[in-house]
Length: 319
Image 1 (cartoon, rainbow, N blue to C red):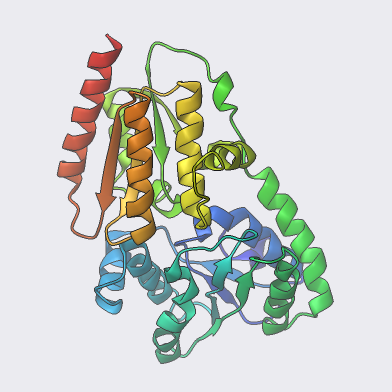
Image 2: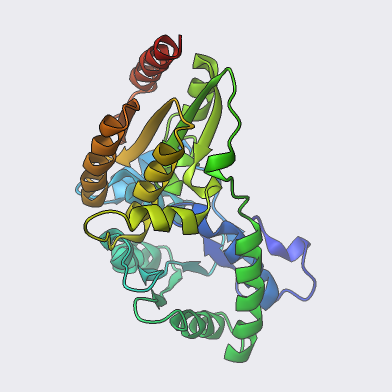
């Protein structure tokens, strides 16, 4: 996203910092358009590095999962660059569904760290469990905290939702062409799949091993994934885990993938539950499945070895 003062005229007010972690990867286009429409100066933290990861590991509680530790590192990297940091309390982003508990308590966890750096946090609750209209209230609260009128938030929200919708290019899983190369479905939270530091350059290792096509959750139609997730005996009430399961079932239904890889964080309760569901369905569909669990101790050499062995097996099956 960068600093918006250079690209948007009449940008005024205190600079807002946005950590490039957790849900940033899911809503980058949304946040960018929202603050642009409000004409609020924004700066994002740099891409995740080993320095940011190490800083977050030292600042955060040992019991937290890797993505939360990295979030602390990104917050620390914004010290001296902004007056306030956006840390929303994301309770729910869909009706009758919840997000992960770590997202509910995130503002409380980082508040003392931010205060020690002479900054404040923009703590706004996003809870669409009963109605999506709650997003309007949340947007108005953010606008008020950055010195804008709540009425301006409505216009900014419309722009943001339009930008968020057009940022995704969906692939019809049933129309994927057959090809001679290897196709792999890569499932997991966006902050693991799209952060090359956390996933230890997994995309490069897959390509080097011979995988020619990788399909991720954000490239699939969310409505189609919801329909597949609805076929389970019991509905999943974690939004992002439901998307992971729905994406796996969608790929298995059309039988376009040579194998499926799931990325998960060590210590993530919801991930550990849905991984068992995905593994069971992959076994039933006779589709190879590999779970890669990541934490701050995961080594790139070990991950590369597992990827190479998995791809060798896929090639053997294809022959």
